[in-house]
Length: 289
Image (cartoon, rainbow, N blue to C red):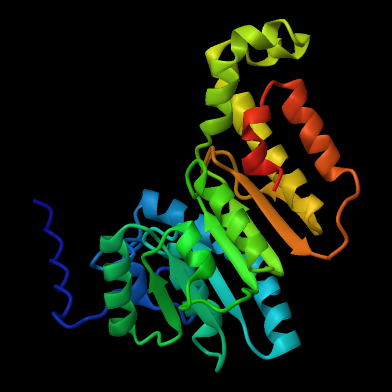
C-alpha cells in the first residue's frame, strides 16, 4: 500500500497574504480591499483583476498629465466628476499624490451615502488631501468648497448625460486637461428615435439609425463625436483612443482633451450642421454651448 503524503502545515494565523504580482509597488492593500478589488484575504478574482487592469491602464494615461501640471505650478487640483465609489480618485491619490507634498483630489457625487463612505475611508487611510462633495453639477460649478479653476477633470464611466455635465464643469473651471471614459449614452439615441419618422423625409442618412440596435450604437458614437467638437470649439486639442481591449469592456472609448486656447475654427459650425442634418437641433443647448 502506498504511503500517504504528509499533510502540509497550516499557515500561521498571523501570516500576511502574498501581494499579488499584478499590484503596483507601494499600492495600499487596505485601499484595494475597501474598493473590493482585493478580497479580504488579499487576493484577486477574475472580475477584480479586470477592473484593476482598467484602472491601472487609465492611470498610465493620466499620470503624465498630473506630473506636467505639478512640475509647472508646484500644485495640482483634480476633480473626479460623477465619482461614484471613487475608484479612480483613490487610485490616483494613492499612486501619485500620496508621496507628494502638494495636490488635492475632489470627488463630486450626488449620492450622499457614497460621499459619506468615501469621507470615512479618507479618514481611515489618512489621505488628507482628498475632499468629497455631495453636490449637483450646477452647485459644484459655483461651490465655495472648490477652487475657481481646476487643473484636471476626470469622468470615469459617468453614465448618459453625466459626461456632458463633467464637460460643462471643466469648461467653467478652465481645466487644463479633461479625461473622459463615457459610459451608456441614451439621450441622443432617444431623440433620434423620437424624430425617426420626420427624419426619413429630411435625409437618406436616417437609414443609419432606422433599426433599434443601430439607433443605440449610432447614438452612442454620435454623442462622443459631438462632445469632441464641443471641446475643440472651446480650444482643446483631443486624443481619442481605446482604453483597454474589447475583451475587458464594451464601453471602451477614452477622450483626453488638452486646453490650448486655440479653438478649432470650424468645430462649432460643423457641430451645428450635424445637429441640423440629423434632426437633433433640440440638443443644441447641451452641445453647442
